[in-house]
Length: 142
Ligand SMILES: Nc1nc2c(c(=O)[nH]1)N=C([C@H](O)[C@H](O)COP(=O)(O)OP(=O)(O)OP(=O)(O)O)CN2
Ligand SMILES: [Zn+2]
Image (cartoon, rainbow, N blue to C red; front, side, top):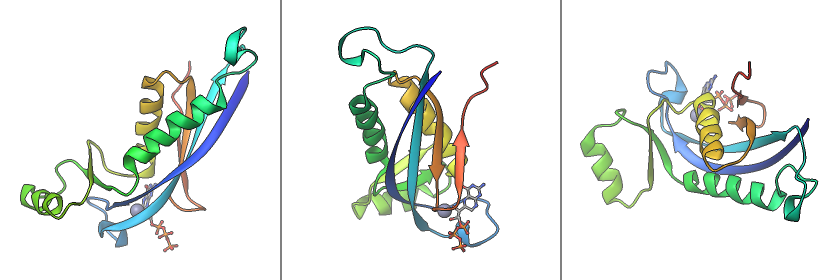
C-alpha cells in the first residue's frame, strides 16, 4: 500500500450554531488541510508511472478546493436570517453556504467528498482548526 499526502490551508470566518461558549460568536481560523491518497499498485505507464498520483495534480486539486473557501464566511444554511444574508452580500462579503454545522469534523468530511468527486483516490482528510486541534475523516473500508 502506498500513501501520499499534501497540505494546504484556507482562512475563513465562521461561528458554531447552538454552541454554549465563545465559538457561538463570529471568529476565524486558518484551517490547515492534509489530504491523503492511497493505492495498492503504482501507475504503470506515462507521467504517472511508479506514482500513486502526480503530486502536481494532487496539489492543484487540493489548492483549488481550499481556495474556493479561502477568505469567505462559512455559513451553515438556515443559521442566519435572510435579511442578514442579504445585508452581508450587499456589503460585498463572500459567503460559502454549507448544509452542515461548520465543525472541523464536517469540513474534513466535506473536503473528502469534494476531492473524491474530482477523481482522487483519497483515503483521509485532516482539518486542523488550530495548530493543536485536528479533526480527521476517513470512511470505513470494510
Ligand atoms: N470537536 C470540535 N470541537 C470544537 C470545534 C470543532 O470544530 N470540533 N470547533 C470549535 C470552535 O470553532 C472554536 O473556534 C475553537 O475554539 P477553541 O478550541 O477554544 O480554540 P482556541 O485556539 O481559540 O482556544 P484557546 O485555547 O482559547 O486559544 C470549538 N470546539
Ligand atoms: Zn471556530
